[in-house]
Image (cartoon, rainbow, N blue to C red; front, side, top):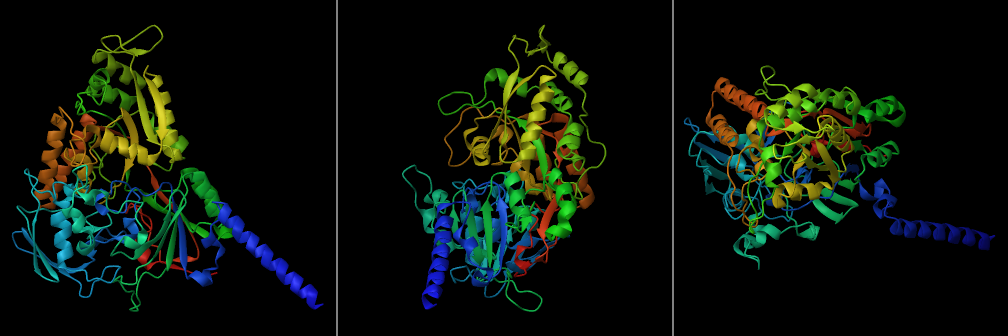
Length: 601
């Protein structure tokens, strides 16, 4: 009898051991999943379609990114109301002439390593990182002021107070300082040395500091979570920052959830399967749910113990654009074939392409009628969004062909489009392969353009590769991509102003990149720059609206980008997740992640 009991126990032990070994061998089965929730505390399991490209805020040029969890600014933007609220700064004072702002930090702020967070870190972030000409950060455009693109003068008054002196009034400043899309405060004690050292390539060591190959234990943060571990292509694990400053209404430290598992699942279909099987707590927080998922999941809400949220139109935008640069690389080779560059820089060509794309069909077939046809570069939730009076490019292949003929293009006997020199009109269109809806849109664009004689070589590629092409190598002809939005138009200055690092359609020479030759600013870009400068310095809301109305009209008239169809903000969340505040305004559905609770099962 005793022998039998021992044998059964040995069998159980052997079975459990074998299970753990198999988990280690199979990438789809993770050891962290084998532990019980009781052993690891509360956790939220979510997903993203691509690996992070950096742990260094200054190198941030993609969404989503780790800074949604790990970093905060002086202010924050409420995802429900759009209002600017205190964050690391508990208050601020603005002078009557609007050119002096003094922020007062919260007392007792600390970094995740226990070091004090003080005014020195604020000055370091704004002066030594963002305003540093040798650091090509996306954050620059957010606080470059006036036609001379001057940075504010930043001065420490004491450990808790920082003074900003502006060259002129600057309406977007408080939002430029906000979480999650603005300037996020960085630790001077951890990064200062890297800004004083240069590598063998002549660039600052800072530019290669805190890459994704860095030991997560070395990353110092101020947000609700710190990076616990990262396995490329599999997952990131965040754990609560014990020094995070926020507390709930009862005075208990935030965040409530102990751990966040951020699984890297490139296929959206696989994400859906994992959500339906209970392996994910949320789907649609980074990018809205695919429309066909909405109807499927809506039927399963009660049985699956989750809820599908509809936040209305999403604040992001989706567009197609051509590479309009006429520049050459350091060896004198044009980034874009000069023949194709002439097509792309012909307004009638871009207008013809816009008329040839059947956006309503995209909405009907790919968005299941839930999308919204876009005609503006400004989010529909913004008070500056212009509802009427914008030029719209309705589907009209006949009009498209007329525009092409007016510009000197012609058709051969096979209906193929030729330019004035007899060259067949063809180009390569890129998009990110891990967004199934976007891949489908690109396929329809290819079909639509073939109907007006244009040959499109369609090539969906990895998202990080696409970003490298559009922000660094300039090795592309046309691409289809999304951009996050929000209340303040100037938050997209990095995309729209000619000096912006995300101004992909005519990317200016950027710090830290190889030199280029012959870059020139286009007339429409000069006017967009002027409007953005005027809009930022104007404090009268009526006048600001008029300025941004002109900006929207200019974009639709000149078509530096061709807007397509806007997503609808759809997200599914398990019933065990409490505290959600979901709208279509923020780019991220879990914008108040520090307040969420997860019920243990």
